[in-house]
Length: 364
Ligand SMILES: *Cc1c(COP(=O)(O)O)cnc(C)c1O
Image (tube, rainbow, N blue to C red):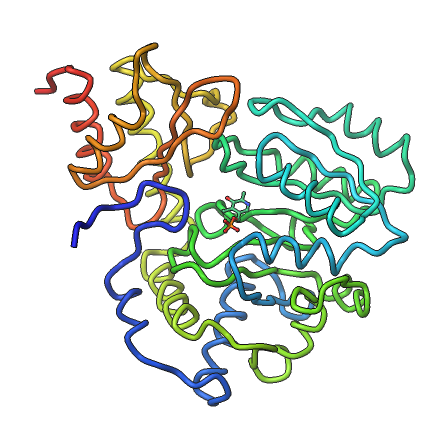
């Protein structure tokens, strides 16, 4: 088998021990298995800095999008209205969900390299008192831009709105004080910074808010309230749970703690990211997002020249053991490199060496 490491933002490179957890078959209604689910739920609250008396963690089958849609369909009623801040494809996906569900919504649409503006947000909240919810992506994986969580949290508190954060690609890799920030719903998934394999997403939800969501969902399978009510009894999933993925995720959580928790993982990711951007800048490959808005998760790079072929570049790097990501912008030619997962400084060094070679720059 041809193996390579993933420099993509999920699925990402996982440890052998995480993959090995999937070699056992587990029974969904067995007490030991249900205890794994309960342990995961309490570890997630711990990582979010959330008190179990005020927050709960609900796991939802499917990829991350399913968990985002579960929140959108379960937490926003027909009497509510949501302000969706977008500066990338994942924010736009939330808008699409709002369309499908038939939610009342308004979009604050920005360029992909732009942050939301405080005065503009205030003006929109002031002008439209029907707005009850605000939704925003934390790290827009489309470009790697990191959106201002403190700003949106403080405004949502000040104006008394329910805050929904898609922290899919950042949770576990960056400290997010969910309770301190007053986030009502934070969404992430198994195969991003916690370094598990794909198969489910999870929601850290404020109990007071979730408890008021009975009967709102327009979807049976994605009813977050029902999922919570079932799971909260004893860790039993409502429908078939992705047992192998759950076991692997539990191992991945243990490994996150062993590494030193989120702060240690953040340092590793940030170091990977800084090194990558510095080294590529030296050979004329520039990042699309400016340093002050750049996340430590994934970077979008501009093509270094007009005749540059991504397909050729991709194949060259893949042959040498790493897989990168195409760009997702329509107006500029770009490619992306993720630096999360079981990736260390020596991988970045190795990758930069391969790229330097490709570019005809002789290193050392
Ligand atoms: C990965 C990701 C998602 C979910 O994508 P899936 O393909 O459904 O897992 C949602 N939002 C962001 C910001 C992401 O990075």
